[in-house]
Image (cartoon, rainbow over all chains, first blue to last red; front, side, top):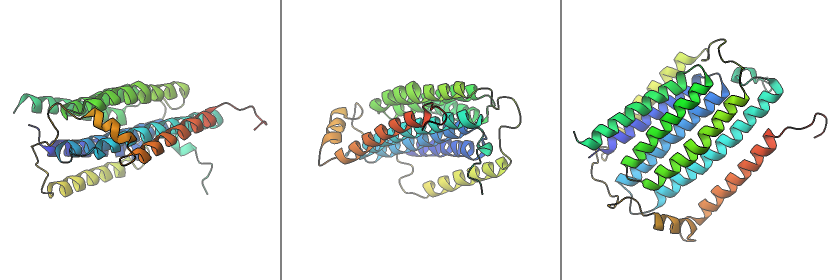
Length: 102
Length: 173
């Protein structure tokens, strides 16, 4: 059998890779992809905890479904914003989107 | 080492390797395609947890919808910074340090937890009970409020996405 610790270490590693993508990439689509990796790590964590410790209730599965819904909402709004910004500024580099910079 | 453990290690190695390729590839189309492989690896891990419903949801929503949406966005914003200049910003080594610090902190906190090495699952044989999950979603004593809030959030996000991305005529708001 697979111990719970393997899932937790794996999802911590996936979360940190996604965090690196968010912190270090210049392209704003790549930043959104990093957020998707982090949300996937969260889902693995939630489902592993549910499956090993708390499967007598449905709360873990409900939480994962809501994470899926908010991930879909986040990516649709984020990509719409990026396409709109690209149309006006002709760039998707996060450094160049500095209209609100003081 | 059992067969399940070997499958887990293979799937985890493929997923982590392609996740590294996702954050390090230069071309955005390659990023999107590596992302698809990463999401498939995560679906395999869901299958190893015997949660079949979310395997299907992962493949349908993440690979079928979100990855395709990202590929469309990449194609609509092409030729912007494909091969010119660095694709990491100046503080990338600080980002690497922050990631290693986060990872070691998470592992340190988790390994001090008494249930970290749990092997026995409480999940019933044959996977999760989809019928009771569906009933819990629409049960007033269960999770009907979070379910409705999530659906309103999704509706608002989709309407907002259409409004933000739609092309407007100049001078006419």
